[in-house]
Image (cartoon, rainbow, N blue to C red; front, top):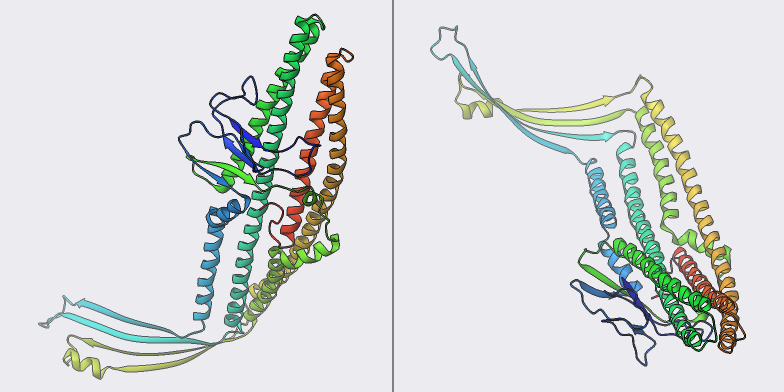
Length: 474
């Protein structure tokens, strides 16, 4: 089970969020949420509180968001594979360049022939041939040069694919980290609510013993306290799940546990003004690697058309070679034979395509369709980015508005609860009214948290879209 310490005023009493430290706790939800066997809540002058681990067999490290991002970018398996694919593409480029150079091969053949029907004394013949041959493509419709250019473009595409994967990891880590921080504060809200319910239950027990309230009223408050303890357990389970998701994104070993920490978040950061939506989108078009990747894919497809057209052009190749050989009964010593049989050859080959069963025409048509699809894919990438920017922008503005409204609502709900509690102690309000006021206050606190972290998440997404990285949570 996870426990969370947050050194902060209750919502409505302050505008700043504390440093959040999420640590493991081996104890469950105790009778009194702030008094756990084996755990203590410590608060210092710094704006942080933590529930330390009483027992652990695994290694534990405290992670900031930047540390999570740095670790994931260095160690993510899919990202490392993507980088290896990029390096493999560089090798393909070198191979494409080398295809323009001459080829050179050396060969030798050793043979033995037996003539059993002959009457000569030496019926066996030993032969050997030796040769060195070279070849060079002089012209092939520009196919080789186009292949080199196309492969260089593919290298740039592969590099942008790596950058795109890095952005995907950044977004996933930011989402998981903020979800965990939200869950951490939700646990603290649930614990504080349960503590208030416990105090109300204790006070009601005194009033019942004094005969001021009925047993039914006491039972209602005991039920509310039990319900709030259940909410603490549920909130802790949610936090466990979010932290596990983050751990799995980081691909940590099973023996590694993680604590999370985040700097204090000012109210002004949650409500920070956003650039114009059009400006964000224009910047994103320049910053997001998938847009440039789509553009380069179009250029590569255009080269693919040129590559296909080269099939209609003739090809010219040059060959040259030298060779020699020897035979055991050739009348000369082997050494003399090798020199006497020395020969050279030089050839020029011209190949003109006349009829290729429509292979070349089909290749050109398909290359044109591929180029058209590449353009459509590029347009789709731009429209997808526009949708993402518009959604994040609208969600950020909406969450900021909700945060303002929820903060006001929480302040009045807290005031209403305090007054209702005072009147309940005086016997003016009944338990139903007290529980209703308390639940409204707890609900308003959750709404503040949800709006705050929704605003932070979408602000961070807009930062990533603009190539700015994470700026609010560091």
